[in-house]
Image (cartoon, rainbow, N blue to C red; front, top):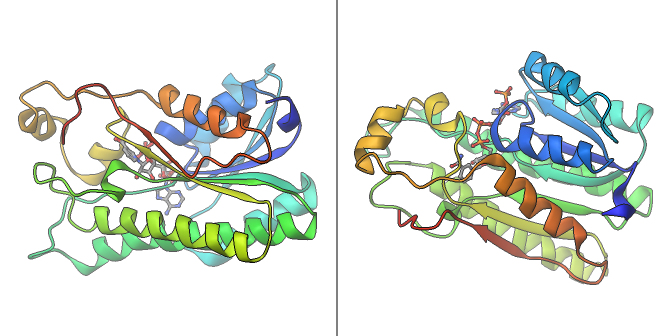
Length: 252
Ligand SMILES: NC(=O)c1ccc[n+]([C@@H]2O[C@H](COP(=O)([O-])OP(=O)(O)OC[C@H]3O[C@@H](n4cnc5c(N)ncnc54)[C@H](OP(=O)(O)O)[C@@H]3O)[C@@H](O)[C@H]2O)c1
């Protein structure tokens, strides 16, 4: 990890769950981390708990469904912190809706955050990396549901959004190959992780517990942060293309 010390990493959705866990770990490793999310107070609170660590967390308020917010955030990084070396596309949402009778706004929200936001931040990060001749690393926080659909967990358009992340990651890797770029791109696909995502989506903890008869095997954000460290620790000629991390006994 030494080659990343003092280098800039942008993490979307750093205000809670997996994103906050990754931000904490990268700050501990000495990186200059920029967190993008709407709840700036949560990121400021996290930044306070990380003062005195080797690196820093800079919270930036950003709604990644609003392109001008993303462009402003990247401009802030460019003007104040230096070239981007790492982008972790982590922000993501699920919604308690259906495909048979769901509402368009919920579907749009899922696709705007999970797919369009990720595409725009990726484009901006690549521009910056190329301009500064940085062989950086992009990590897309995908999901097991980006590779298969669950009959038990009713996630409507969410798996389609994550299948898009799988295809996006692979398409980008081919673009890098064709352009002879040494920027790396990785899909990291977690199984269940204990975070706010289910409650935020309107899927209650009770209904989940019911689905799994009170026994939902789950990881913690630290387990996913450890995966990010593994990806970043590989030598420049080694690219982790896909990393799946699931709790033991997760079958959904
Ligand atoms: N938890 C799991 O079991 C699990 C499993 C597989 C994959 N994942 C993926 O892991 C990623 C992180 O999810 P999590 O479980 O950590 O959920 P979480 O605790 O609900 O965190 C979601 C993050 O996304 C941010 N976000 C949502 N909408 C946003 C927007 N419009 N603009 C900017 N940021 C936005 C939230 O920040 P604000 O609300 O402050 O904006 C928050 O920081 C997601 O991509 C999710 O699909 C999760």
